[in-house]
Length: 275
Image (tube, rainbow, N blue to C red):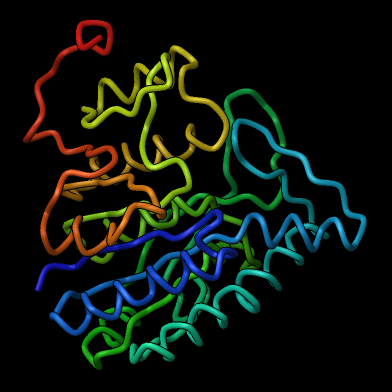
């Protein structure tokens, strides 16, 4: 069975009804034989704990600036609270699951994220290598991996905060997944008029980034999509968590929901021409 990486983030992880609906869909897909790898963020939970601890938050180009104090909070929230709660939810619907980070089994190694504008992001990393052995073993044993977006520095062996979408793209390519599904609050990529784009090529995604139409968290999301396609992932889907039975319809029924990035099924027309 072909592998699929599903990235969960945003309100998906804090809305109990949404989370329950998605975990039930995941259970259905697993029972039907789908080989799934889950990757999760937890930005809202991180922000909540930072506020409680009176630690200021700041972002640059959609990425959280992560000093040592913030990195420790990120590690506690993602590797502890969020990952373990997802495992508990999955187990409650009959899915055997294991929560892990990139450091477990050296699954995902990172280097510091280098920006051309010179802004120091602190302990923000980008994945330089994925070693799929542990994930392969878990899947072979019928266990669903639940991967937090934390990676181990390949030189300094400390944890780095990795953008969840970039982590999912790296895991998808490194574990030979054919499909990457990013489950979001917004439900797709929007053009300059706020309309959801059903399809995008790589060049059209680049156009959205260069023109500034893509803003905030959509910028690292689109960059992650481009990385996944360039690394051989056949199809990337950005879908809305609140869409009825979104995972079943996307992966089992193969409906076109949200935005699809898949070069082989798209025509190279500009966004302006499509308007």
